[in-house]
Amino acid sequence: WRFGSIKSRILTVCQHFFFISFRARPLVQTFTSWKAPIIWEEMFDSILYDQGHTDKNSSVALTVFAVGRYLDAYLKTFLTSAEQHFMLGLPVTYYVFTDSPEKVPNITLASRRNINIVQVEKHTRWQDISMMRMRTISETIESEIRHKFHYVFCFDVDQEFKGRFGSEALGNSVALLHAHYYKLPKAQFTYDRNPKSKAFMETGDFYYHAAIFGGLWQNVKHLVDACYLGIIEDKLNNVEALWHDESHLNKYFWIHKPSKLLSPEYCWDQSIWDKRDILITRLVWAPKHYETLRSG
Ligand code: 2GW
Ligand code: MN
Image 1 (cartoon, rainbow, N blue to C red):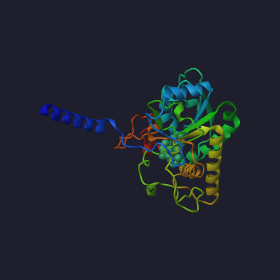
Image 2: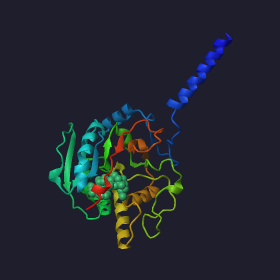
Image 3: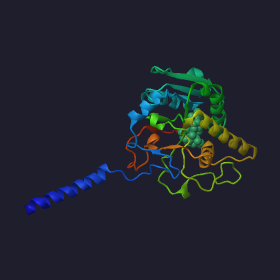
Image 4: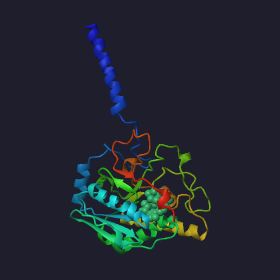
């Protein structure tokens, strides 16, 4: 029996080893110091969330910009993949902002899902294309979104949905943890460090990624207005924040704490080597082709 017991002990040890190396996830932070949840896979019951939002008749507007070469490069994949994964079961309207409405691809939409194409000018500097989104989003919330939707989510276009991006992501004020920074010490966060910029900050809570933010339209309106004001004030003072609108967004969320944070599972960069925390990729960064996209 001795042999049997040693054998079974070895087996137990082996099982432990396998469990630890393959099943257990390294600990991730699931709440902020101000008690806002950080949404990770396995933390929530998607059926309960969906039921709650169906009962409340929650409706969602998604804004996305596809100006210049970004339209051909990214928009079709973004929209078709959103139809597969974004807020399925809830009424969703896409607001697509572009300089060439005639080039927007024709996508088949599920029922209670719509698309609105809005023409915008093409700023010559790409930094302005990115920053001026804040103003356009504000104007569109004011003129349309506030009358028709509870929530607004604002997305970069250079990304692709890969898995459920559902109602668990809805909240009063929602920010995204940047995939490159969520594990790094605060000293390495790329906040704007120029005291002359309105985005200047010495320390913060997290480094948020401007590729996704959202919430109730009232809160998103407040956010985009504040960021736009900062951007304009910087222009008057002849400064530009290090990461443009993203710097202003980080400043905003430092002062106005988000009520919910999305883990990097909601916006993952597949070139990151350490994927141990990522149990599911819901959205991934599309490859960048800087040479062709940023020139000319
Ligand atoms: C942007 C940079 C260089 C060349 C072109 C563009 C560009 C951006 C464009 O020609 N047309 C266009 O529609 N855009 C929109 O701006 C598009 O929706 C795109 O996703 C968004 C932000 O630009 P992107 O995705 O190239 O910037 P990232 O991925 O480096 O993003 C982060 O930093 C930005 C600020 O520099 C923003 O804060 C962005 O939200 C962040 O994810
Ligand atoms: Mn992007």
